[in-house]
Length: 217
Picture: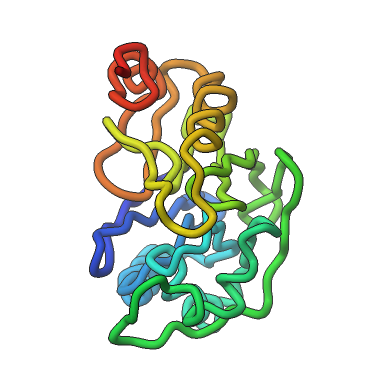
């Protein structure tokens, strides 16, 4: 049985998702924002779960700031798209603006490359699909749990909005193409767990999203 726990963490209210197999007592984490370390470790301890993977939707600092510490504490495998590695290995060089704290580099990780593929998670007891959805960053990806009709969308698609494209590596046309050609091909009932804000569905965003939906101006 799966359990999806959502935590809003850090100075820009970034979502991360701890997904646990309650029978196997294993879990994976989608993104590792600032101030997620203690809540994730406490939750793992209280539920008796072992963290097996940290899946990164992209490598902007607000999604990766606690990744080093979480990996160190749990031994979890970190997975990142090859085109976004440079921010992970040299995070303080790519924060865009000065931060009042230091982010530790992650040097032990597994890269994915290309446009899509599958990953074994939860000690190979589970399987998750990844799709390359650039536009917010060069190596942005979304993770699709086809069995449970869920997509972890990072900062690609939000409820009523899309990821910003005015930062290095961003491009509006590329992002909109990623949403139209990849995410909007998912079934309408698919639940979208975004990097910020509330959950939504693919069907709702196809209709009402003001940037990429049918009613977009």
